[in-house]
Image 1: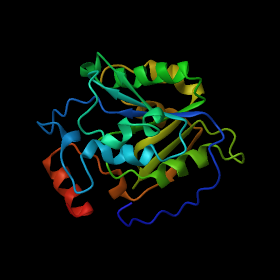
Image 2: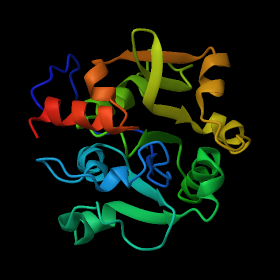
Image 3: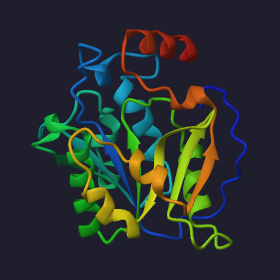
Length: 220
């Protein structure tokens, strides 16, 4: 994506039933305007990473939003078949209380779908790529590492989504409160593997400076 080098080789199909949880219910409070709808040359911010995950090897995608209305940032082509069958929009009524509520909503829906693992990613990380996602899944499913419960991307020792969690950790994820993300679980859990990534691919759009940097990286 955007000419970045991906050192991983992707082979075959996903062996496990992994459901993606695409967190898109944030309030954009630090930005002061709807950051997911901000324009780029390739489309609105919120649709960029979605276009990558929908092409990945995940079984299904749960898009967590604050309202039932289809987000304006959602590329129209994904609202039509066959792409529309790849994802389901889930309304989180308590999203305003913090990210933990969106995660819990996603986990509960993933459990109903019989998920063996979830991939959690953020809609405001527009440069996450299909190759990164598939690489995380491949590492998670590596038979040489059967004890792996978490695969987390990292740059300069800093953890960031996307992250894969085994179903063994669903109960821990459901216990998160308020605006608490999953980092507390990641830090205390020993059975994890690290996927080193280019920090540009993990750019998180929180403010105007981040947005300007995104436009510089993507060329507009």
